[in-house]
Length: 327
Image (cartoon, rainbow, N blue to C red; front, side, top):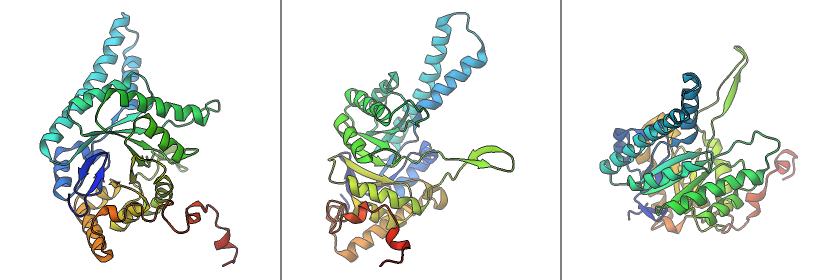
């Protein structure tokens, strides 16, 4: 293992930098480029359950009423199988093209038969599986506990089917992310990814329509990630991967000091290209030399809630001290 190498999901990574699931990781050429620039692992673009379900619904809707019930069943099976087969081929090609770990990704919204695809993903050769889960609360009758129980059902179902390690990508918009992370661990997850950055809608007041908000993360978003990584570290045995807002080597180092075993990036790759991976790796290496750290284990979690001298710093949520003139 290299000096900046880490252990994540039981996998040996030559770098803590993981390329997060995004449009770039559906290209074999890009995957090769990320490896050549020093990426520790690749998370393939997610196989979206919601997209497949919508495609099926739209096809059935616009095709009119089918003369036989089995025709509709065939359409459902065909669309689902076609999307899955293309994804399995991507896994196989990626594994043949690079030597670093390939992590498959499923974007889940239910705990139904969808989880069976996990077995096929394992057979295709994926080294691990990331479950990207977020159920948007849209009903006043659905409690937080009911929503979080869906997470548990999904992870439990998948963990029973596969032997490869599972990471769960959760959102920070939970009543208690630490409890959810712990529940995921008990359900079979070997890693927790903090956090899932959701699609954000915006409003165009000129044309009176909904538009997409900022699609790329910003460094400011990292601060909240650091808080929850630091609070979660030591409360679970599962590995932690920090993501969202990591734009440079400093952001990666902060995340690891808070307790992250690895960090996942994507927005900065769109902005600066694959070479930014090399730059971040060099920053981590040079900082380690400056601080005399021999390996990443020497500093991962060093400034976590569990290890910091004043843990209350992570608990502070109000700005009273800073805006009241009291020093």
